Length: 283
Image (cartoon, rainbow, N blue to C red; front, side):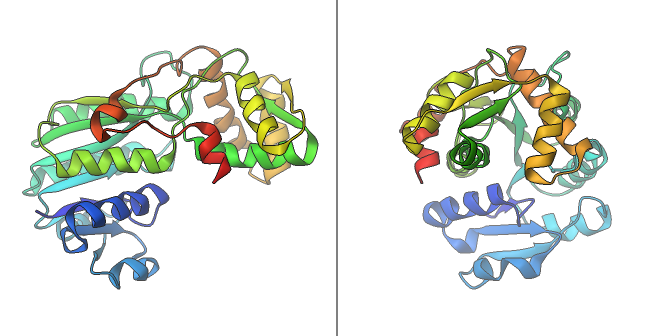
């Protein structure tokens, strides 16, 4: 069995590949990426690395050739992902790929204000109408993203947020990779939708308590409106203000309850509990 992973240079793809090497062997894996030269450490271990660019659909027939299964990792260019996803889905439908797992987002539904939600909302129906079996993995917010907040809390004693009283079951990216690896190597996942979440719903006070325990000093929660949060985030990280505003829409989605969801799908898939936010931030 040949298993392809798109977005091969990204963190989720790399971590999924590590799980698959243990579960299925390096020779079964194909990493597909725009930058194959950056994956030499996997090539050296026997993983096949192929060029493939969702913006250049003519590259995808060769990228997908001979694959039995594909992990289609949603691309990271919010606002312009639909054409990329459509190109990838069309190429997968035209190939001999029999099964696709797609990485989606919690509750990609009408009204969800998170910038990432709209394109998942549009992509999922296209996938369901394609000529392959499908499994959708709706991954919760990565706990890994909180590492930056932990560092700023260590420096300032404050957790800046626009999430209000909203809660999230933060999940480790490695757990998302582990769930994907199980789906890609197992049976019975066609037609399934899994919510991959962490083990606990945390609001801002809960996050601050975790950070405080790790730092060893109090962390104050500072609630901001969306624009102020975007401005402070841009100043703290150096990201462009438009990107920071897009990032702030995820906080609004949390505030409005769209990510207030916890599931035992991960434990059912892997047979173990997902990592807590504290465990991820302790690593």
